[in-house]
Image (cartoon, rainbow, N blue to C red; front, side, top):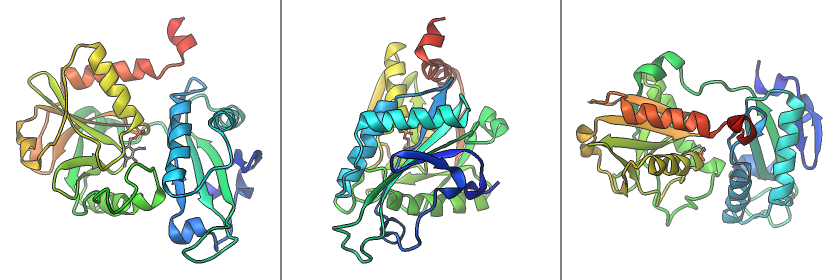
Length: 293
Ligand code: PMP
């Protein structure tokens, strides 16, 4: 079912409305000029994992695009919980989105109303579960993550996803699950919707997030690795180093911890560290009350 034809409720500018009524005008600034920021979150057992961190990142993303969302983090948390509860799926993906409205049409949007909508739906696995078991295959993207001097790279802004969609489509046409993007300097950066980790000699290696999203899942995985006493190296990773890593995985709210089997000509074998962190993550996202029971 297309996303505009589903059943359920969407929270729109302060209240729940029927799913099919959650529309906007074609002359919306957010659509034409990408003045739009969003979040991707998951609820497990009815509870949104790290809801406050996501709400705060959403508010911060808007600020980086020079607009202010007219709701507080507390109000956004409450709205998200209400959407999940109302739509009735304990395990759900949650999508808040904020954008500039239709009051002015042009680059300048000084007087446009800022809208906020929140939807939720079931999204069991981001990648094909079978491919996931063996490790997904990644293409090398042609486009690179831009220089932070050219864009607000810390914002989860819709405009920054143009390159991701182009790269992912190209990868899918070639039979790959996703694409690994380098940054403007040619260093390993991230996938189109997830961060990347490598394993060498029992230690984790991951690129320093200085020009791409420092994912909430990425930070969670680092904390879980620390808890296990696994060494973590956040550093510059060159593409030619891919030959030296034994394991590789990507992580993100939607992707969770997904093993990688191949990146272009390089192969990896999902093994103990990837498996341990995937299991730790699955345990970590469970609602605290349930996990204790
Ligand atoms: N990078 C990109 C480009 C993403 O879209 C995402 C998903 N939001 C991530 C990284 C991972 O972020 P998070 O763990 O906060 O979901």
